[in-house]
Length: 114
Length: 114
Image 1 (cartoon, rainbow over the protein chains, first blue to last red):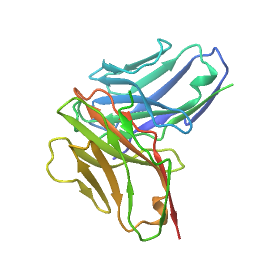
Image 2: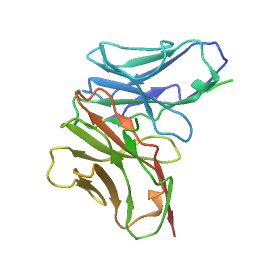
Image 3: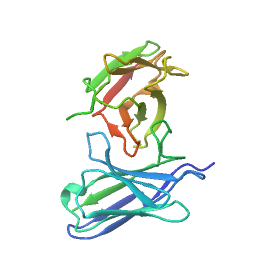
C-alpha cells in the first residue's frame, strides 16, 4: 500500500507570495495533520483535520489555513510568506482520532522563502 | 510550558551496543500516548514505538523498547544492538486528551560508531 504522499517535494517562494502544499493520506485514513519543522527543531503542530472538519489548531497565525477534501486528501495554504516560514512541512495521517492511533508521516515539502 | 523534554542533544554509541535516549513529559491528563520517531537525514519521520498511559507492560518492537516510568513521567527509548543505520535524529512525542495534536521534543541526534 502507498504511504502518505506530499507534493511538491521542494518549493522556493518570495516573501509576500502564497503557497499551497498537498497531501494524500494512506488509504483508509480519515485524519490528516500538518506540522512545521524548522531546521534543528522538532515538528510543531499546525492543524488536524478529521472527516473534513478542523479538529485542532496549533499556535500559528491566520496566514496558515487548510482544508480536507471528500477523499481525505488535504491542502495547506500559507499567505503573505515570511522568511521565517522556511521549513520542512510534514503531513501525517492516521485511521481515526484518539490518543492511541499510530500516525504515519509523508516525506515532507521543503519550503524556502527568499 | 515544555510538554516533552529530551535533554540529550547528541549521543554516541558503539556499533552492537545498547543505547538509551531520554524523554520526560508533562501532562495532567490520565489518557495519553507516547511515541518515538526516527528521522534520518532524508527528512521522513519513521514511527518506531508507541506506549499508552494505561499500558502496564513496556512496549517493545524488535530492537526498540520503551522504558515507561509513569510516576516519574519518563518514556525512554532503548535501542539494543545498535547498527550504523540507526544514526539519525530521534524524537519523543505525546498525544493527550482528545488526541487532536501531537507535541514533539527537540530531538536527540544519535551517532553509531563502527
